[in-house]
Amino acid sequence: MNIPNPNEVFPNEYKTSCFIKNVVTAPNISVGDYTYYDDAVDPTGFERNNVLFNYQEFGDHLVIGKFCQIASGTKFIMSPANHRISSATTYPFNVFGGAWTENTPPHMVQLPRKGDTIIGSDVWIGRESIIMPGVKIGDGAIIAAYSVVVKDVPAYTVYGWNPARFIKERFDAELKDLLLRYQWWNLEPEKLVEILPLLCDPDLEKLRHFLREQYRLTKRRTADRPPSISLRLPRPEHLNFRFARVLVNAFRLHSELLTPVKRKRPLIFLVDTQRQARFARLRIL
Ligand SMILES: CC(C)(COP(=O)(O)OP(=O)(O)OC[C@H]1O[C@@H](n2cnc3c(N)ncnc32)[C@H](O)[C@@H]1OP(=O)(O)O)[C@@H](O)C(=O)NCCC(=O)NCCS
Image 1 (tube, rainbow, N blue to C red):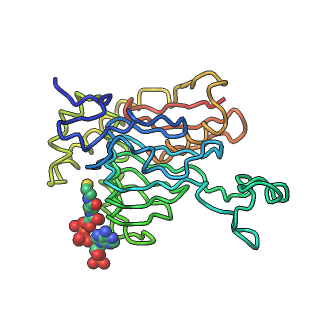
Image 2: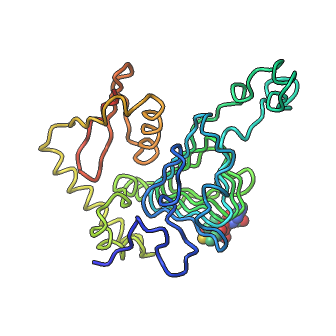
Image 3: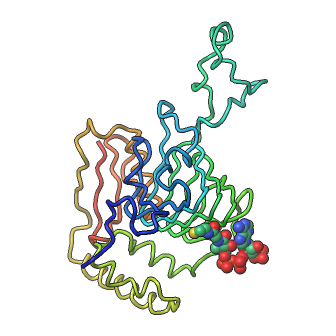
């Protein structure tokens, strides 16, 4: 089967849409398969032109899921873009040297911390939008063109304007819930091809019917299984606490079914891995 290859920089001959996971190099930016940035001038320059103030020593992350569509001119502003705002002056004396540096605390230490920016899967960001530091955008959300997103955007909603505000729900609660459980973006590529006609059909009732059926099958299959399995993540040295937090935030956004079952270390979370049609116990050591 001839399926577009997520590891290619340009999926088609126009060379304006770039699968950006293949050009991003910063270790604090992660991008899922098939997420593209569209730009007629410099599509492969996403990291350089569109992720601003990304000073890795500050320690925040940009996590973007799969199948996102990022329109031309979208900018992700990272936390170090801010100045210290808790004191009388916002002027960054410390970065200019000499007696100014000697008499002021290190610049980065005093900047406000907004946390990681996390974008779910199948998110469409309209052109020239600005995503401010620490914002979380849920799966299937749409950001209207020329918006400034300053607060979290729930899954399958449309947000727009400056500051971006709720415009509308995309689907009713049941369909939204079924889609979030199904997470089509995690399907094997061949299976995805099979259901593409449904995913692209404006007759949502066909999709609802299909997803209800999948949900019934899943429930039937899980009934005979133990309620959880253990999924041990990479060795502890690969998984520091910061990364664990990114992972947990990503799961929370993607499935909204993450349940902490134990708060002290080791952290244990229940993660609904719909794809495997069972609950997985995720142990973060
Ligand atoms: C968000 C969007 C998808 C909405 O499309 P739609 O469902 O047809 O919605 P409508 O045009 O009916 O507008 C719905 C409401 O959103 C508002 N709205 C639409 N676009 C907006 C924008 N860019 N900023 C702020 N509000 C916007 C409308 O004013 C309307 O508000 P109202 O309900 O108070 O009257 C579309 O307007 C948009 O911004 N598309 C992005 C296009 C783009 O950037 N493409 C890049 C190449 S991929």
